[in-house]
Image (tube, rainbow, N blue to C red; front, side, top):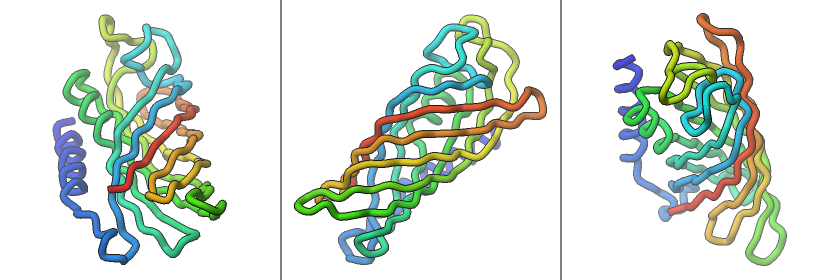
Length: 192
């Protein structure tokens, strides 16, 4: 488990060291994505709910690296920072869900554009199941699966994006049955 923690910490530190090159006009920019919502989760423990509750709130602050290919398309990489650090330090757990997203952008006229598109990443978990809570923690186990999402939103002239994202994650573990995560989140991406 220590190796996985150090690997996650190294990825976060390396990504934070990458400078934004958006001002150079080459299409690259960096920013932060703030997201909050709720989820159904029949496998992992939620630190904000009682034992036996399948799901609960979700939130994260993520580093975003974005490449705009013209005015109609963009590809982004979102690296979770808040949630993995919080879970690692406060709860001795791993929940790490980096994601690539593809955006189709349609100008609406004026200062706004509509954006929509899918996301694909990986979900990594190490911790107890949903029948646990902070006072009665069960055995830890490892689970992983694809992180699949779809977003619709508005792009402001500044490049910032306000959107809603639907999330689906099938989780697989040798020690537990297959899990399902379904969720939705409001997100706001700030481009630096």
